[in-house]
Image 1: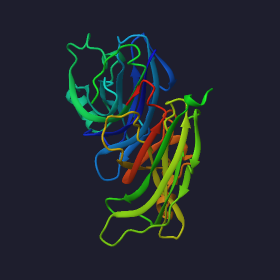
Image 2: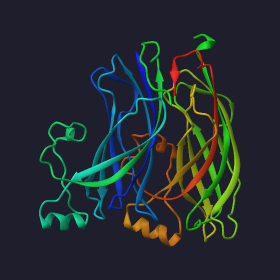
Image 3: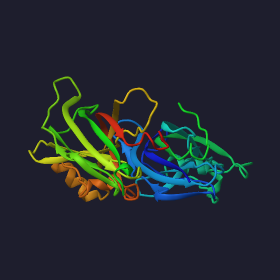
Image 4: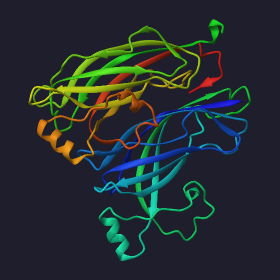
Length: 179
Length: 191
């Protein structure tokens, strides 16, 4: 089977309005793919920078995937949550990025969106870090079929560094672009 | 298993310096580093752990130079469990006690049969400090000028164990690393 090794880190979350953030991430692939070793999902620590409005995680990722076909190329999904002073959390960003199709080092910047507050009261609640809507169906993050009529607002960027190692791709005649 | 099935990875480089944008909050800063790899990895030469000297910054400069060498050779059968390095920073505070200044973690540069030109990787890793979530211990720590420590810094290397950890990031550590691999040429591995 062709194998993909994903080694890297979730470096930081930038441009968010909220100070204390953590990221729930998962790597999701089609039914032909399977996880051989490693964790395909996780949650980072809650971080805030002492100077800038940025949350740094340096959260490690080490995953070994194997596949019998190329359909359902893996995606990297993130959900960013903000924690307030009362230790309550609410979502402030959803986003995904496809795992790059070339081996080597990649720097992904995942731009995120969140559900926009509709009423004035909701936007006041959100301003004081106590509100925020979530989505019931988490597959909205990575699928494009039921997104119509959802009112969203753009949010910050999650930066992910990945090293990809492809094994046995030549053996199965899979051609990828060498950088 | 025959001998050809082993791959070799030689890592060498240095811990160059540490910088805190608003200056360090302790004197005589030193770093303990630990190289940790997965189960299918075996160290065949070099050391995986070390302790630097206690270094102070020059007046007007925010970088604290260590120039500490790191060199280690691994033999491995599986790419999974690629080595990571965890750095623990300590310093002496105003009361003269040694306190934790935070942690940093990196992956060893990951290049196998790479077409990228230079092998030297300059890595800026952020320094992450644990903070207490309990208000009373936060006050006590503030008065005593010390920081909470991780009993086992290696949990930072495991993606499943950092949940519910509260941290604050300040400063970064500058590491220069090079890698050489052997035994991977004949294999169908690209990175």
